[in-house]
Length: 219
Length: 359
Image (cartoon, rainbow over all chains, first blue to last red):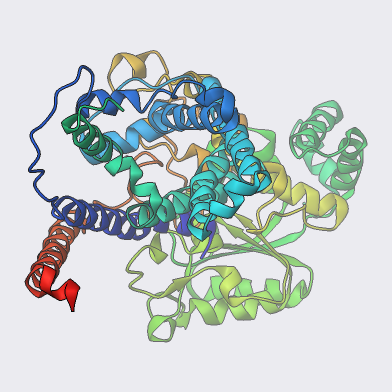
């Protein structure tokens, strides 16, 4: 298999398989999680200002008082790499083209140089967050294989994409194929790892906010 | 016309100065040191016409058309005339048995010294019966001719990589020259058709240094196939700015913006079109408003459609809907199982009474 055949495979059958497993996994997990149901709360709901599911959805995006001071790396690094990922994934013209091809939705792209900067900053933030996880004994103790694994599968698409655009390490064709392959691996593992928070995040925030709202506690 | 090349050129009105300029240009184009131009000129001027045998197999004659037509009035064309092209079916006057005799004679006289140019792929299915010349299969002729060749030049994508005949489903079992011949130096000059100057460049290098130029991992001369079309494209700044033509006749197309979204394969195609251009430097595909097809890459025909951008799926997503149905089904099934488990747990739940505690 030469590199163009490799690229054609990852753009063809490889993408087919990855998107297939992704869609299957996402629907499976969503049905499974949301059909679990919860016991009816028999207590009379209390009401307090700012205590509701919707409030919590937004509030949990903001660090709690003193949180940034307590663990700056987690909050700042976390913010930077999440926003960076969003910029790179949804702002790069070839990515928009892919989304347009799959869904019909399209929007203007950002300049390549800006995407380039965002990719480098994202990778730097991810490395800092990883080093922090390794250095802090408590974080290290709490980390499981899933944490290291999901960091890797998230980092690789950014790295290979950046290397491909910069023409580093390997010929562009091979690097582009590796980039698409790494994204396919990410798609396949996403529904079955903690990366599924991309889908469940707002649902669980709403749930927590609702439960606490019933008790009259804004969280 | 068997004397040194410089005499023949002089007879055709080419001055020494013009010839030197040509050699220097060729040397710089191939990224050789400045002194190489002079060495090239000296070696080429003194060179006797090397015997060249050109074998056409499963091909469309486009490669020959490209070489002979687009550059016939230029010096490259002259140089091309200066080789002793002893066998070329399309160009030679002889036909039938005479032609075959010419081939045999050339192979015998110049055994071990001639340059073998092949264009077209070689079919292997049905014992090679898909393409025969004078009652003999291509693979048979190739093996015989390759045995006495000093080096082989695979001209065009068909000879270099199998090309269009090899495209899926490859009905004739077509393969490239390098799939059959393993014991001779082979230069691949892919392209559909290849750029004429690449051919003369390789020939000049061979005459000057007695060796083949530096090749990349696909056997292509690095001097011409070292960089992608995309990296050398004059429309590259528009790609970097995110300015793309969306259709072939929109504002972006008229403004000459990047053709990436219209399926240009420039980013993954190694060739010299963007610098050398075509038709004597007049233009080239991207300049004329059409994306690169990637014709100098192996299996470009099966690389997912000429008008599909590189970042979009090569095939339509086949399993999407099926996966959604299976996924939803699995989710529902698991949720029923979970609910059954909960019900069973509830049913099996035993309440503790005061009496139990006092036991």
